[in-house]
Image (cartoon, rainbow, N blue to C red; front, side, top):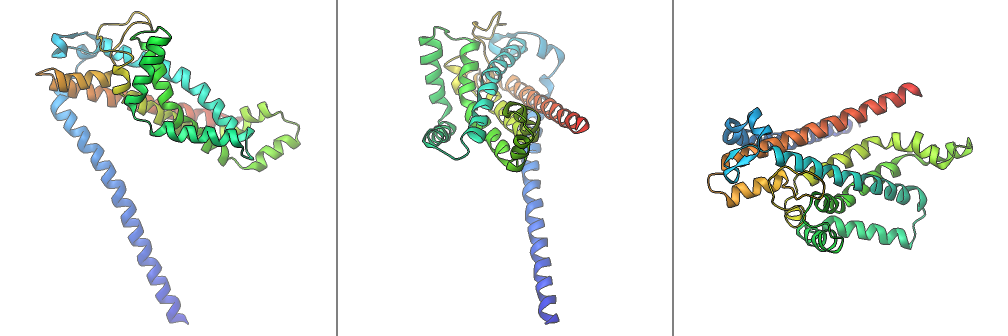
Length: 290
């Protein structure tokens, strides 16, 4: 019997070491891929980066000058998308997780729609945004049209992440709040949402990444104009569209395209970092108050 136990322990130890090696190897490959991508961008576009590149307008079809109007348009489009998507997505996630917990026909249809929308190509969203926001609503090629189209794109991602986080909160917490006479709105605000904050943050970060990297949908909605926008109804070129245009349509624009890609990655890291810091600060404050 001791011999069998010793053999079993040795087998388990080998399995644990193999699993550890595989997990660390996969994580290392992912990190190496990102570092290789970053190194390539720095090698080809690092010399273009400067303060002037960030604060001046593009010249000669983007071969010279900077990306100031493109950067402003990108931030405005992202702001419109998140302003429209986050409240609607959070409300839908709350409805799915706490108001239809037993399941129902309408909830199943909503979940089916979310699954279908998550797999719809971005070009289809672009055509829809052009037909509905630009033409039917009369918004034209504008930052508002682009932002609302991106909101439609990121809604399935954010709703699924938020719903998963809210559904993972133990039901005992809900029952305890109800037993203490806490209203559903108060329980949602003070118990459920803070507990689901990591999932909400993850969904927000994924949504931001999807919105910042989008190209096809914005070509049909926000347009190609590279001048400084004066309002949300002005056309504006996003960074991803600018990178595509420089690399595909502008001879000699590769250097500026690489530099713009570096700015896009830096912007994504900065926004995600701020989002995570605010989430951690919110959780720490909630824990200290409790």
